[in-house]
Length: 378
Image 1 (cartoon, rainbow, N blue to C red):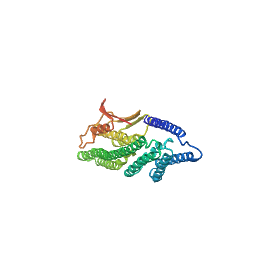
Image 2: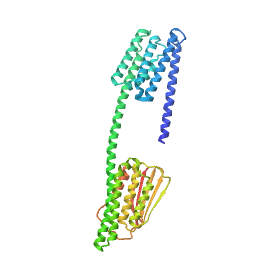
Image 3: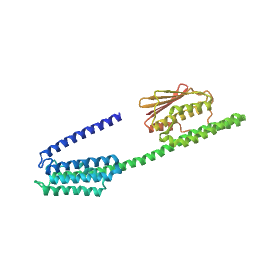
Image 4: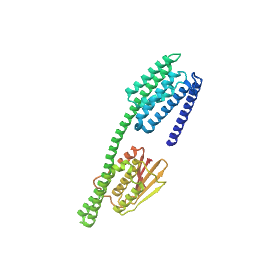
């Protein structure tokens, strides 16, 4: 929709500019043909024709070079535009009433005022006003054209005001960029906190289990298995921390792949299945939305392992119009819950993450189990 609006706006601008240019050229040519001296193939009339051709050629090429190639040919563009204004002055002195090329050279004057350093731009504008006044007083029957002088002065002031506006916009963009950097650092801190909270809480589960096994019946095989799982979780947490920066910059893996890996990890650590269902047409998600989906699923499955031992889990990811929904449910625990120390970022962290991107998180009982439902715009 935004793309359609942009194309429509550009088309409207092109049409409006085309109409104005056509009207201006028509009025200019009519005035030129009715003026004295009129364009001709000899004498002063020929000079009028040549000066018009030179003025429009220099004006068009100067504006085109300056806009198309930017700073690369900016100096040449400035020279061409100064030449166009000079040609307009000569034309004005030769035939003050021949359509007045100054009206068209004002476009070149505006470009000069935008490209030149401010002091030089003011100088060019002032000299142009003075030249119009002097040439009109010397060659025009009615004297200096005060209306034209006021128009050039207005163009000068308008261009200077426009430059100040652009400078203010640039300062605003720089401030927004600085704020974005600070926000990015804040998100990085949040991601590292989440990763470490998940990894360390899962390690505590396994290490505390190993301690209880050793203290209760000395089953060293099971205790060793718990310790190895904790070691693997520590390695995984370290790797995820290293990937946090890249993830926040839009390099997050496909959520479907990550959810499948989390399901495999759930099965490896609990011996219980975790089904993953994806509906809708998968598409690339904004980094923060994809990250919210992955971290919420990760935290929800960690909670199932901690608070519902023996439960089966199910993860559903739905791609809908304008949003993505994630739902993690479990069938309820069938084993005794061991109250272990340490806690993850939990439901509060998941809810805060969703709210940061205008999403919602709903949690609560689901039959004998528990349900975590996330909806984020994407």
